[in-house]
Each structure stands twice: as C-alpha cells, then as structure tokens.
Image (cartoon, rainbow, N blue to C red; front, side, top):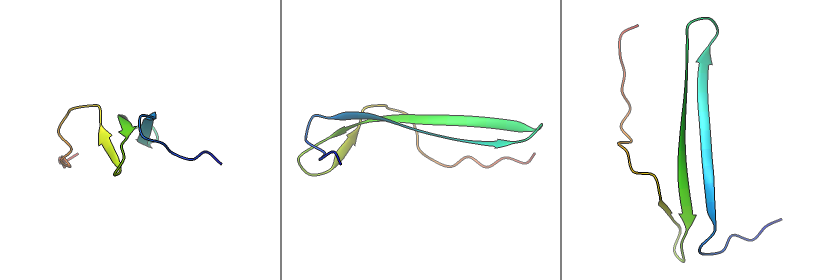
Amino acid sequence: MTVLQAGMTFAVDGGISIDGVTAGRIGDSVVVTETGFEYITNYPRELLVTDA
C-alpha cells in the first residue's frame, strides 16, 4: 500500500460508451495537499444533459 503524501500528483480518468452510438472520456489531474486534494485541471464540472 502507498501512503498518500502532500505533493503527490495523480491522473484520474473515466469514461462511458454506448456500443455503436457514442462514447466519452474525461480526466482530471489532482495534487494531494495537507488537508485533501486540489484539481490541477481547470474546466467546468457541471453535468450537461442533451436530448439524443
């Protein structure tokens, strides 16, 4: 097991796909702080829902 320490950075990636229809991926970079974490990437984090 690795103990998380302030200053460590990580890429956190995720995705979703619907076979033959569409797919999407999103990722964040984060840095561990003394009190938790901070995002390094800077973009809106709202959920966008559209009619397909």
